[in-house]
Image (cartoon, rainbow, N blue to C red; front, side, top):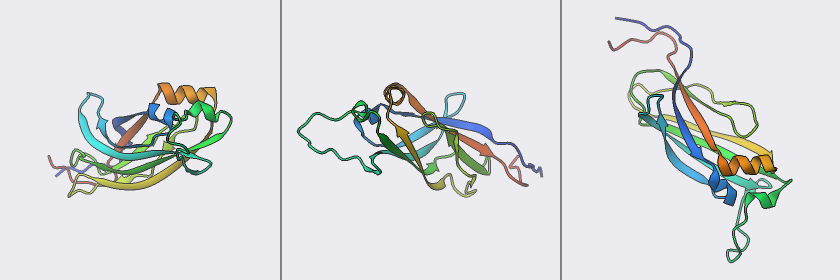
Length: 165
């Protein structure tokens, strides 16, 4: 019988979210794959990112007019709400806890608390929401139109844990 002591968090995998849809104020609502360093899918992250105008969800005023683009909101604040619902289809029993981290635009790193992985299942409920208020500038327009949001999923074994091998 082997035991595993506390360990440092290690990168389990990464999710990549295309941000170009924010140029037209569309929300992102998807289950995105978590891809390991060697390119295999090791789980999925359910997320929703919604743009807000003056802290209410953006609504198209006139459906007959061309769609507004983010550059038309220059020098105004727009808020992006990042909702992380959960992790699913995780590879089983390699770790006991997971956390998620990402950096939105020019902000500091956003790190979630550690969540315990259910040893009987393959999912973790997160139910987290983060709000990022940003001033629309040329730099933000460039970020939205030509970048991706990289979300890292980190794993950690915490405390004593029986090894299966």
